[in-house]
Amino acid sequence: MSSTEAIVETEHSLPFLVGNEEMAKRIRDFDWSRTPLGALEAWPEALKAAVRIILHTPVPIVMLWGPSGVMIYNDGYTEFAADRHPALLGSNVREGWPEVADFNDNVMNVCLAGQTLTYKDQELTLYRNGMAQQVWMNLDYSPVLDETGQPAGVMAIVIETTARVLADRRNAAEHERLQRLFEQSPSFMAMLKGEKHVFEMVNPGYERLVGHRDVLGKTVAEALPEVATQGFVGMLDTAFRTGEAVTGTALPVLLRHNPDLPPEQRFVDLVYQPIRDDANVVTHIFVQGSDVTERVLGERQQKLLMNELDHRVKNTLATVRAIVTRTLRGATSLAEAQEGLNARIMALAEAQKLLTIRKGEGADIGDVVVNAIRTLHDDCKRITIGGPALKLTPSAALALSLALHELATNATRYGALSGETGHVEIRWTLDRNEGQPSLRFIWKERDGPTVSAPTRRGFGSTLIEEAVAAETSGTTRLDYWPAGVLFTLDAPLEAIEQS
Image (cartoon, rainbow, N blue to C red; front, side, top):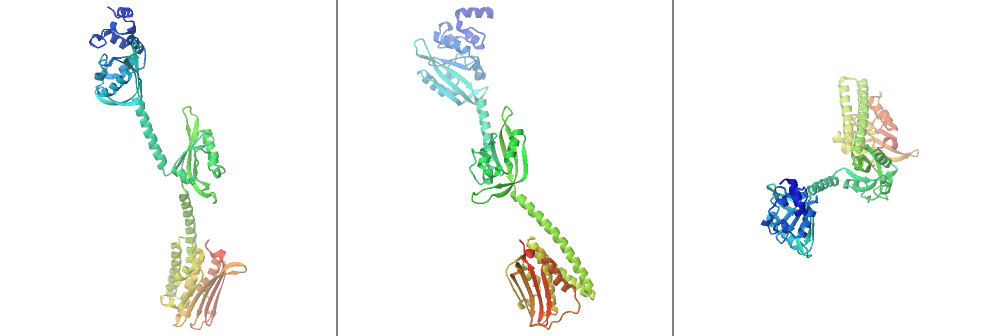
């Protein structure tokens, strides 16, 4: 008998098995007399009707008939059964799937009692293709009623969701990883939604940047009103409209961390990156950047220091040149020239050292005085120093240091410190000169040898009077009174005080 003749014959004797499905043929060919169901022709109408339904359904369905759960299934279920097909056909469900026997026992008990069961992403371990596999499934179980209305079997719809569950888990793990990176990133990050730029998400770095303000659910203009007038909203608009990333480097931004205080200036590197949906439409802007305030201020400070260093080097070289030229011009011998040069250049070096320690930020006048005369170890007890604190500019400190060195050298050789009884008093006061705040500085010698004016004006006198006056925008006077040398300096504070 040909297959066509077999189908025609089946249409008359077994009309519920008509069709070309694989399982329709296998059910027709199976020896059901070896099972509790008996021959096909003797099957109850309820079972035949249920089989007709599942065979013509593409969804994987298995019928568990009778108390033992004899298995009858459709083509869709064969893929789920894998290498257990076709041996599952006609077997009892407990023996067919022994690794989940307890689970199926519960299904049979519940559904043959007239109830239904539903499981979403139910996790089970099944042996398929020669190995144990962890699988997830959506399972729907419902009773199949016989002609008397009593449950006679169970219809099970089996949809394997393993691929989706694993994909969801991978996505969840990736999302969690990205969330951790988002939260732990040292840079600031935020996600803005829509053309109004509503905050959907911010990380701790962004919260620190904006002073821990509550920004979620608000537009940028609402949450950070001071930012709206500084061009950043316009940059966001551009990124949203064009779909192109907008970047900025060391951008200044004023942020108000405390409503009672003025805004604080920060500097930021940032990127506004548009995010598109599946339709290639921009829906969000991802904000990422770094607070580079310390770097910018450091670079500015470094530039200032480099400029100051350049200025100081040029001035120092000019001073050295003047010292060399004037010293050699006024010296009467090579030994005198050598001694004068060594002493003056050493004094210059000590003054520069003091300024270097202060990192170019000037030096206190008291430190300048002490540093200039500290080589006079044996005479320090005969020197009185006193005056208020005042930070001098580097140029004023350098000029005063050189002048004090000359005064101290002259006092040691010819003046008050050349004998055993002389004293030097160094005092300074802050006063007003013609209505302007000013410094008065005095070097006064007493109780030493009788003083007379030098017969020739040397470089030391010129340095004491002219160089100090030029660098301080002040006036100087050097008097040779018989009782001792008196040097005075009057200089406006605006010219000598380091701000």
